[in-house]
Length: 522
Image (cartoon, rainbow, N blue to C red):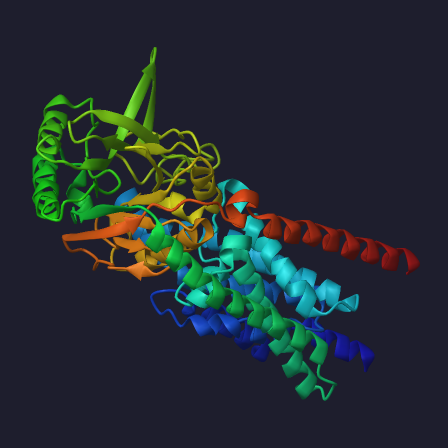
């Protein structure tokens, strides 16, 4: 009978599969476009219930299945991007997604596997699950250049009271809190089903943590609002040209691109902006190198009293070597180019091709130039003595880049992006949701100019203000505060997440040591 029970435990049941699939679906539903963010607080309960008290191999497989469901449904837009702009056949494009999703699912696999080991050592999921999840989530954000897309904490971007704590611990504290609540709910369900005593201590501790975070948010938001009200103000205009990606790099379309951006800018100038922002690569030529087009743009700027931040590719030469950059130029009202920021964190297969020898069939989606090179982290642009921090596209999902800019004195964050690749999928909404945390973590306004949307202002408390519609020409102008001061998060970074990763490593060593001792006894 004992052997039969053991074999039964080793098999994945239909109910286990249903639980894993449900967890993956609930996780994805908590993110835009669906955006049912309360789902995140219960999403892991089915997975935890299915994996508890099961052999390690079963727990691993269930975690992997949840990851496959979750990341496939969150990143479903990747094949269309790779197929349309990378030129890969549709089948190969789906293979690219499959490879990425399998890799990302390994983190959930490790989560359930380690959680099971620690459960067998008598450690409660309430205390181990948040640490494991946060440590692994942080690792995913730095390993292999990092891909922190859809960290579970980002799902709460609309719940302003909850996310204010990010100015101390970063987005990872929100992830940890969500997982802690899931773990408590799981343990309560387990106690009810198996007729065990409820773990009141764990429930009360997690409840107190959530209450403390909400109280902090309610206390902090008025403080931030008051500081923003007292701060010096600048009027910023965001210009959304809505340039079709298929036409963007066609030389004959350059004149129409400049005409469209300038027509919108003329309308913006009626509000007397101090700064006008054009999106990532709004200028589809080498600014300062392509003389006729550059001259036209500078002549327009010289008719204004505004400073401009313009996105454009650039390059430098050193002998025969040519280095390309994805850049943002700061131009004064007299047409003098004051400075340039070069994108630091590049998009794999979008701006350069890693692992060329391993995947020779994969090329770069952006075919306009060769591989881009990285710029210098923390380089700020000075707007009449007020430092600006620029984040180009993908960079806004990396907290360290925003931290580096604010540590160098940035008083306003500018995010230039071109999300035309994503079409009308959920990707532009997901991208915007992550930008909210950069504003809260640094307590800076973030002004986001996107070629096809979503352009918006995000205030230092994380409110998304005046968002544009996708694939429409649009203009947004707003007075924004130039904030000063340094948050705990800016000063010390991801100390909380790093601590969770270190403890996760200790848990791994503890589990391995226990396994070795058990084998030696047998």
